[in-house]
Image (cartoon, rainbow over all chains, first blue to last red; front, side, top):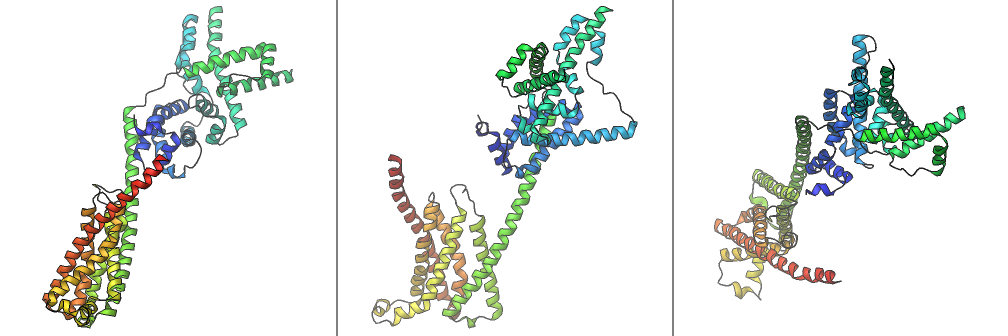
Length: 198
Length: 304
């Protein structure tokens, strides 16, 4: 067991801010995959997620001396969420300037629902790609709130700080995100019923 | 109807957050509502299933190439910053060392000027000697400032530099109080001790006094290496003696302006012998004393 594995995130971050490479390695080991999954699900684009992943750690490195209090996890995901919003905003601006209009986002697994029979739909409901697709359909604000809560285990206050919103707004976003996911996951049932009646 | 809807929404909002916080012990008020409201019961059931399904999503592996590239970039940044910081620290240390070197050199020449006739040297020679002395002082100060805080092989360079400088300070104080010339006069003229040195040659006297004037400051100053870095007291004491000899050399040369080469060499040789004896003997003695007294203290603390 390495010495770093016994230390908490906050101590490691302070050590890293002081130039401890071992502390950085331990934090990187703990949060690399989590951050990558957050970014991948939040932006839905692998290339963008990879760019944002690098940018987040480089920003963390630059901002490490500003770290004073609070959980490291919240600090890291605040940086990631800010970069994500900036990048998505830039991407949206680029897309609009090129096409001049809105386009419908391609949802993975979207066609499968309409083409399948009720039995396979029932299985598909459990399939991760449908849930991934439903997450991808959420508006960014709801999506990042849900991801930070469900996958990173951040509390209401930490999410509020990370996203620059109130704790009340976090609660509402979480409620709406879950309501929309439920609706999206219920939809295959309706599609199955409709195809069965025809 | 609206009131009922709001109540349901409020209930579901609280339930969502209870789920997110991992707090499944819902308040009695919410439970009462759930018992009465089939819609909220259904919603609560769906929420839990959805939450569980979300948790069951497989985690994507972090691509190895991305992981390595990112880590390498961060470490490169870290190395670059550390190199910049180190060079800034080194620049600051060099500035402090040169400044102190010049100050010490001027002060040393002034002290010697009070006791010795420096007019035997031309201003150019004096200036060159002062500059060389300043460089030696600067090197010793740099050693004291930048020497290893965590000594490698037990060699605490910092304490060697500090001990050398302190010994030089003590030596100058000694010279300022009673120069070797005055001590020599005392040996030759004082009725009490004159007979002791009656048959002794000048060169031998200079050797003895040169040894004494190095030995005494080093026996005192080597307490620093004996106490602060007691792992290799003899080696460190020798090194402190070496630093002192280098620092004392310009002082000896400046004081020898009026003496013969033989006398000057005797003095220098005596100084070297005194330094190389005083450094290790002093640091060893202080280290032994320190070790002797320290366990008594820690032992008492340990048994308390």
